[in-house]
Length: 332
Image (cartoon, rainbow, N blue to C red; front, side, top):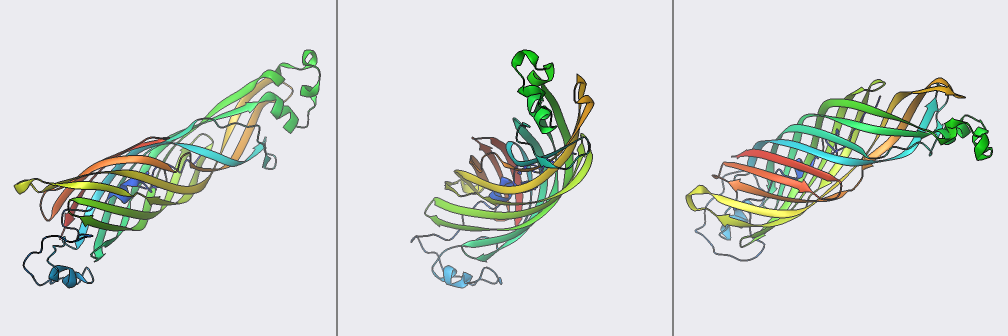
């Protein structure tokens, strides 16, 4: 059966779909108001840093800059939809051997997925945060399969569609269409890092996340298991807006790169009664899938309510992928 494992890297998802790797992970650590500056700024009174991390913290403190609490835990929810591209198609008809069949079409394949992840991390250096993620992913997908009768006849070794048009059977002008539908669920886990810096109220950050997802799909033709590996990179830049006693608001924008490849397989049965093929046609397929577009755009906001608590929301848009991410973090 079809195992749609794409979507978006929570980047399993791949958010790529079932992968569990989504842009959520990449956005999970938006830089806060206390990141070290990339340039000079006002110095404050020196203090002693009493934490093991980040490495080199005291040198930064001695320069008069503040650092955020070094450790964090959080939770992220991702919901997205994306189109996928299929390639390297192999099909087998009525239990035969798998062969290349480029005449079979898979137009407009889309995946919807949701993922919930927990995250734990720490600032290893004043400019670098490292973290691990784990969670669950679920969703659904529909793949349309078009099988032209003329191509099918040729694949079966019949020359009936090579005759003059007036002598060709109806099969040669028909296209058999089926829909492979599936739901999927599974778990994902991964690691990531964010490199970030700040100059006055402007910040830049580049999160990178790698996620592995183990997904079980159920749908047309039965069920199967898939493992996917995805990589998500989400460079962004923005500005910090002090809110006085209400903390600080960070508004940012950027792009999200999502890469991952996986295999899917399944079976479909077509009604071919009244044709030289027979009463039914069983089609088994194996195919490689990936995001139709690796890049899309993103915009979001991160609210540092206190030194310990913060929340964020982000949307992804453009090209063939859209998503929404919300998250909350506790830093200590």
